[in-house]
Image: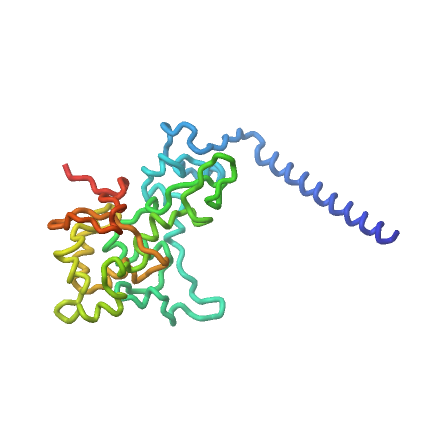
Length: 298
């Protein structure tokens, strides 16, 4: 009997607390809305023809902002970095921690990327290394929308939860599709297709003081000489930097591999290209994706 009484009292107390919180929440909500008409939440660009950039007013609610048409197709395809950074500028302003939880100071250690010949300076965050580091600005021209192509905020995994819905093209909460972004510069060195050995073994036979980049032994005049002609890369700067060493090439073609596969790059036709297409290349495109193609100057 005593146990029943105590449980009943506990249950009653819990219910009372819940009711009290609910009442308080209602009072706060009512107080905050008094005298002010609430703007309806904008749902994912029902009228895509009228899709417009996000409003940057401080008074705009978080829910209204996250459902702004700029986060969806087609408006996101026209979004500039300035549009994105109007709300997300902290992405480039935050810095790495000065010390690890164990007390190891960043100033006294080297991050993996600081060991590369193509990197110099202090530690930087992920987004800084891709957007504002000296080497990134030298050889790349990445924008926010290169990786971030928008997604439904209700979906934090690519698996559809509604019958008939299309699966999102992103990986869990990263909201990015690595197959069309990260893999381009973080895939494996595809030496099996090229008929060489692993690069760290093969390069020794190609490089010396007069020829510091063994990649150019084949790729200067013989194979795949039409390359990097996309909007997110600075082709001329890459070719110039590559004259000083192969790490410029290998860094994006196996040296910083995050994945077990390589990216299936398009095979743009090059001068004196063999007319016979190898079996592995028969399904390869011959042009870059439309959104990354350079437009001819008029």
